[in-house]
Length: 174
Image (cartoon, rainbow, N blue to C red; front, side, top):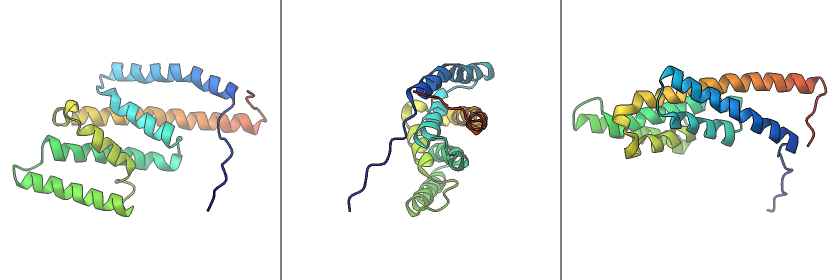
């Protein structure tokens, strides 16, 4: 079965230029918050932005599952590589049981609020040895939550402004 190419959903040149101009203060604000609040590892916040804002196109329905999935990925990474809650071998048994349960749910498409693509993405990054998940699990979670909060607020405001703008008949031409 052949599928028809879908119409382009690219923004106009004018809209793209406006978005580009908005990215600079947006990122400056985010990095300013990281600095003022003393939150490290901004890579986890940036990963959230790339995944939810760019790949998922700020889908409001995907926001909470993305945040919770990312957190569960970080926590699962900590269980596997960082500090299992119990001494060996019980700690590793619990960690591997959690991994098997997460993979089972992921493959079956169950528990989507906690186990989803964001879980696997953040699990992968959190377990990179240079990230030192054992020492940085809290910073990873803080970074994620800061960016998610910031992006969530900005997204809600931007959608409200855009909706209001287009309701009044405005348009950006390219």
